[in-house]
Length: 479
Image (tube, rainbow, N blue to C red; front, side, top):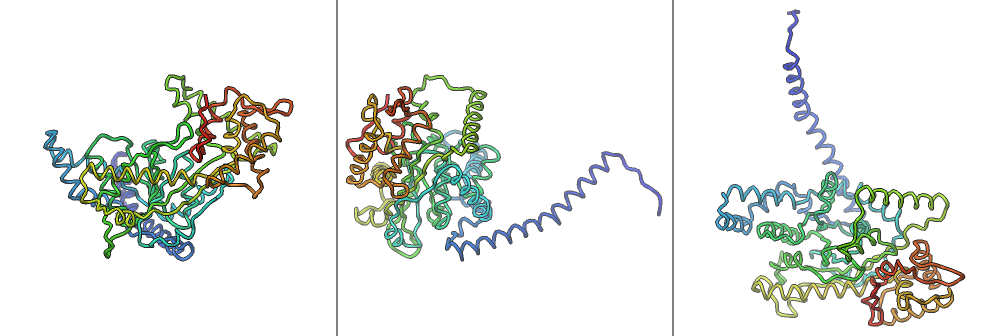
């Protein structure tokens, strides 16, 4: 009974590994699942009581269940069968591709991660970089939205900070599901993005099978009442202006939209959101896209630029001269009900053919972009930039420039633009804009006179272009 048994090292290692695996699967994993499920349920109860955020059951459904629903959807299966017939591929291979597409698209929302970690990180990052403000909100119209509607925030796209800013500001009303481009499909960012409820979209994909799978998921989420956030422009603004809308995702949402007010039929309500920044972190990199032949910095040079940028801001922070990156402001406009629109125009989207439906979706997209443009906030930097760009060769005294800025504010207010005036002080707003431009060496001051730096006119135009659509007189062109 007391005899020792000798085992080869490889066999002992194998047995120890199997024992560890059994302990993990049979003992630790169930306990960890119970622990985290309890934490998640606690968070869900708290946000329901404190924030009055109603989480759709769709968002709490296991990811594998949603993947299976997408995979077995009748339209997806029909598209797979058609692809197999047309290409000659084995049906099993096409099904594997469908499964891969579904796993790529479907998120894995985690309420604990969203509200306990994601919200805190978004709030910290936004407030660290900017003075974050909510400007205009059409509270009366928002209060009239049917709580059983599917709400979609449609937003102008100026910076990748848009995701952080809108999610942070909307977190006390809803959990947003963003459509995120392929740029975020890197480890570990893609796991975090999925856990926050976002889904990945391949921009400009020409694969009909992929578009069918994506369309299926978007329609499922819309029918289930998932609050979504969409950037109709399809990408960041390159020159600061609003871009023409792309309406692929809108088309997916509207393709099967049923305007009939019967039980179980949700209205689809679009809320236009306008965003503006005193400083866009990607401004110069976006402007480079206007010159495809221009030399791009290499990776090492790019790292050096980023490090220098960080050191300069750290030095300003330590010396007390850092003012963050100015203001970041978000406006929420008047909701647009698709049910009311469809009934008014006598439309029934499921009955329209492809051409007629896309024409109507294009009309809706143009109307939404117009609504977004009307509520883009006028911030200090855009205000001062638009004044100085009217005559880039002029040298201004501070008094002359201030008078011109005040006149510009009156013009924009008369046009119905939404000006964000910090501290309700027009002089202070002018001072903030001028200070930001001089600190960045976009505007120079010599002997008490201010003028744009000749080599920075393109950057100055970028910020002026953010409000160029707000009246007929402000049409900066840059260089």
